[in-house]
Image 1 (cartoon, rainbow, N blue to C red):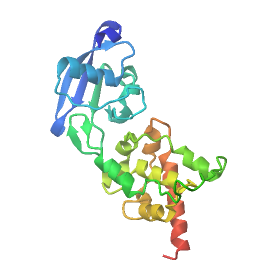
Image 2: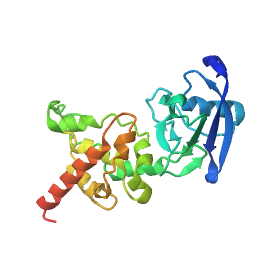
Image 3: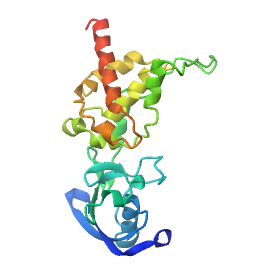
Length: 244
């Protein structure tokens, strides 16, 4: 890794890594130019402690798998320069909040994706391969709403930032609800009733306190809070239309 960077000087960073069972471990990591948080974690694993576990794939902000807590804030570590988050010469890195820890900086993503399915965040097709492709009005208000959340890559940063999830493990969470809102506005999706029923029940959109942490910390600058507000409106309308 040293060959990829120019050493600025003999300066060292004081890096605290939160590990299994609430324990933490401190490391002295040399400072390099253009160093990201993921670079720091990789240096520790490659040079100081080969048992350190973490997750990453693309390193360019496309997969979201490198998300961790950095000084208490959920971030993509591959796109976060260490110079932007240092407190003095120190930084604390930990696993994402609101998800079970597998080991060190690796969390179990199953609960996150289970809620995606529970929110009916899967396409409900109504056509077969023999039917003509459905026309979509790209200028319609519904299509604009659907497109607004399409770039979610399931990094779980919003889920880790969500205060409601922290206090209510049954809450579906901002990513799953945003996906539900995307499909609700998709003219090709035939699951409107199923989606509204899924997101209006226990743990659904009405549990959201509208604190906005999901929108504040989304690395792709999406707006899950507005999507959840849309679900609240539509589920309320559906409730009164169906007389229950």
